[in-house]
Length: 569
Image (tube, rainbow, N blue to C red):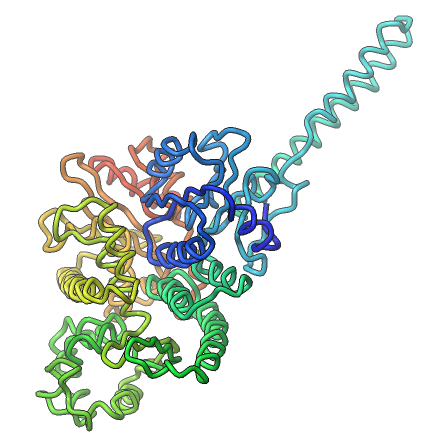
């Protein structure tokens, strides 16, 4: 059931209870979690935080906590499956689900007692109507049994005539039922065919804080990071991003206006959020401009930096800007002030000549005191690198806590270590893309492109993680579209497979929709993977909250792919 009044029907219900927070492992969830934690601290609500990485984790976490808790808040997990069927909870357990995954399962939508959805109604949900999906079996049966009980007392002649009428009615009813079921299957197929994402969970909880008049600048910053995460990991359309940015901008203006009168607005520990029309160069303020251009998906693909011509083009581009190489190759912080002053304008002007018309993007920046400045995308990359860190053999739980810590402004050391990890990750992605393109590892399989990262590829361990693999996949498809001459291939989606667990002999498989600026970001691979696995009895594990990411036994890879080709042709 959708909740209309988030304050009354959610917050005031859980405010005097003990709550279990089950949080998925992505950046938007972390930000939503931080906002909710801050609200719970304000009102001294007792809660237990449990990070969950997939459906199995969610089931285990629920079993461990179902005795102590009645109220469960699920962040970015649980909306796109029949949750009650999966968890089999007691009748008094209540689930509040704030999830960006679409489509929302119809049983969750129409369950009025135990499932409460904290999901924006104005998102393009398209939920089928109740009567198209559910019908009362009792009514149909009741019609027949009434006739039969009357028939017993009738003389036999009348009874035969009566029977014919009853039989015809029953046949008619069965035909209607078959038609209804066929129509239901069709409606459900259309509704569940594509996976996509709605308004960020962090934005939903920020709205709650605003309604409660407890919103702070920190909460607003977390909501901005949650939205930026959806853009960085390509979950929402450009139109949706721009619309949501405009909403955030109104909140930023309100907060900045509110603080203008306060004396402490210039104190050293103050926090200032600003709307920026900034460059699409990843982490450039914490790196050198040269390395940022080389390792940003947008510029690297436009220049085709994996070719010699691309490298030449980059040198020409730098010359066109009139920036000395010594300046470009040193850390951004150490560049001359005269160069930095109008850097964005200079880069934009030269980019236009090189066909990069949209090098600047609407985003937000934050200043902590006088020294530290971060863009929202810097925060996303740093936190994602900490969340999926493979440096030390630490558990997912430890990484989750570290990533959560890096979002607090009191923990800037952790954030800086995340930025260093993010740089390594971006360089690994750039090198993997270059080697895949140069060695023609991307094959056209008919209805889709396919790339398999062999065991032993450098940094292959990093790509066993879903977010890193998603970034690589997105980058790889963009690079392939820029480098191929085959027009048909430019319109194809991409499936990538990478080793997941060598001991168990499994690979992680991920599919993304075709690359285009106007793409609606709807992904059909979730359903296709399920069907292909079913038809070939491949040993798969559909454990990720995104249905387009699965685990597959290495030996079953070829038959699974053959089934996909047949299915999608």
